[in-house]
Length: 142
Image (cartoon, rainbow, N blue to C red; front, top):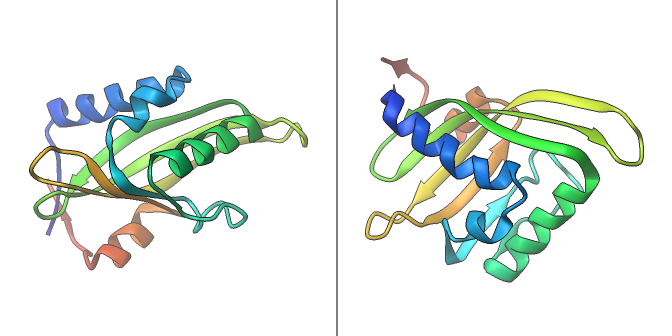
């Protein structure tokens, strides 16, 4: 059963995404396993899943280049089972080509390796309910 994490764990997630929001992709990449996967294809259908640090970094760069002022901030984090979390994320920015402003919430399913806390797989979904369904979770409790 999914459970809301403590404020301290939420703060840890916020610290991780602070490096993303500051454009420090090397630090963000340090949170991923060498063979980790970053998959935003359920939301950004023209972006293929990326495996490994080199490809993940390319994916980070492409997303950042597509949206001016791109920010991603965790709003709420749910703990599932050992090493799996679903975060409600807020993404905002402005399309560099279109000029369209984006401000949306999405679900982010992350699986971490227990030995070292590295992200094995980070997957973006249109909302938290979708991420929970993919993870095989439905109920949320405090």
